[in-house]
Length: 165
Image (tube, rainbow, N blue to C red; front, side):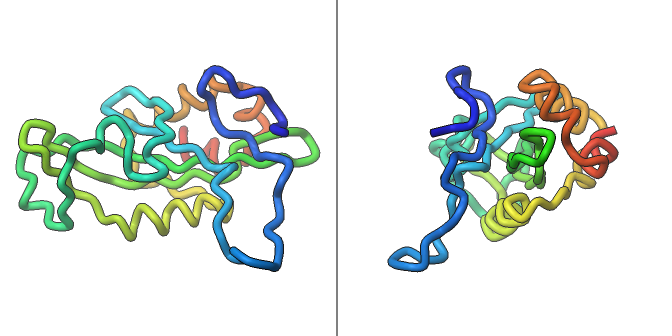
């Protein structure tokens, strides 16, 4: 059972299951506390498809690790946001940003998948890595986090708040 009802497509709040048993499947990552945010210019929105590289902007794209192969790419950011609960309630515990470029017309995109996976892991480990975002992207992310749940933002670490100011 979830801590909150999540019917409006908001952030995934940690489920009651927070431990991994020692049997079959040990070491499997529980993505129940991670949500993916897409930043497109000055707009940020939740797109859970990004957890499996199937967000609305990623579908139908052939990926390359060579940026020169996508000369007309539009910049996007995926931000992995992990939520947790402390003595004061739920809060945004981890947030890490990953860069990618997409040329929808050419159906080509640039991203480094290993970077996306590692940064998702860092978010799950409650790290904040948002320094690469520009002011416009930080403002969009901050607005989304506050609009989604202002109390969670208020309960978040000073490190997150400073990274978004």
